[in-house]
Length: 212
Image (cartoon, rainbow, N blue to C red; front, side, top):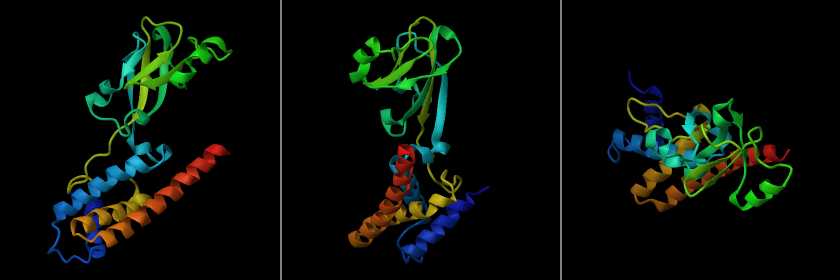
């Protein structure tokens, strides 16, 4: 069974590029859409990326940390360290609790304040490609790591993972890439600006919600 949404987006992209089929092959246009989807995923606020959120459960954290390279079956994490979205810690193998994110610069503060970490009040921070967990018990401690995985490549068998509300932005980004290959930097810039303006508007909405 083919990817009907991908086929529809390819047709729309041809219209935007005023291409009757002589300049770009369908496979190349699908590649542009795939690259556009990856770019969009790296630029959007995390709250829009539910389709890309995954979890590795019961990771051994008895040494105090979980290596980011061990996540997603050793594959890449979208946005790298910034792609870690949440952590649940099970001190000594007990029931897992959501950990509070912190920064390495605040560790001394946590050791002395009323917010000090414990088995009932775990924290986590990210440093040098590791997710460090802070709790009282180390032996037997495990962690559930929530992270963003890269989107799958768009193909004639795979539709974009983003829902329909993001398809116009996907087309704008793909169009920008195609015009650049066609050595039309002016048209490419116009399409990219339109995409980025929409992304900024969406991200600003989430940032304003966070402030409320």
